[in-house]
Length: 217
Ligand SMILES: C[S@@+](CC[C@H](N)C(=O)[O-])C[C@H]1O[C@@H](n2cnc3c(N)ncnc32)[C@H](O)[C@@H]1O
Image (cartoon, rainbow, N blue to C red; front, side):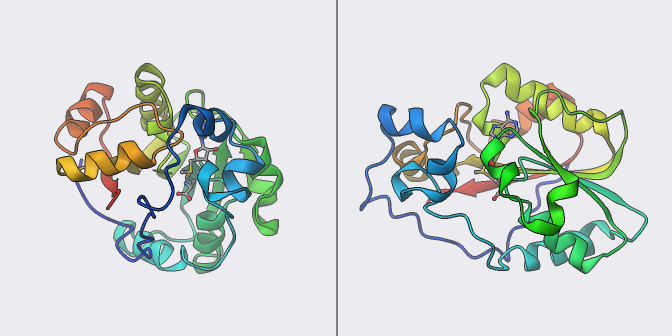
């Protein structure tokens, strides 16, 4: 297990916490459906428009270089949404075998065109793949959306279907201010831990992959 930030090239979008008081029970109920409102509706429900703009390209390059991915490797993205990262990985490494799962029917129905054959609806807690199917299993900002027991199961599933590398990124905080920011901003999360506590939880799950944090500044 290594703490490594593979999204360091991803543009940091300042979350407009002061401007949008959005973390209300009402908003969360809508966001947690992971439908149109969450991806492409108003910002108070989620992304405020989840479009392809090439911002995952640098992340794909970083992952290729870090894990030395080649045409003979297979990659799974758990919580792939519209498949943008997979698209960029495949563009970079055309022979790469890719797969994506997401619980959101809306996202899967709107997966970027060339990734449609490789993405499907599934719950992270029961990945529809045999043991050791993938050289790299990625999950970015997804498993903290599950309640603690399911979150554990999802991490164990990543471990089960992976045969080499895993990369997990979750919402977290280094200090109280960041914790407060996250609590004022989150919509869909259920499992919250500091950067000191997550690694202990990963170990409890039997996780052996890499990990990093999404911090709400
Ligand atoms: C914050 S988005 C992250 C999407 C993408 N990984 C990214 O970083 O842009 C969270 C994603 O997790 C998906 N998700 C939530 N619960 C899930 C579950 N139990 N199984 C699979 N996907 C889930 C949502 O539908 C959504 O696409």
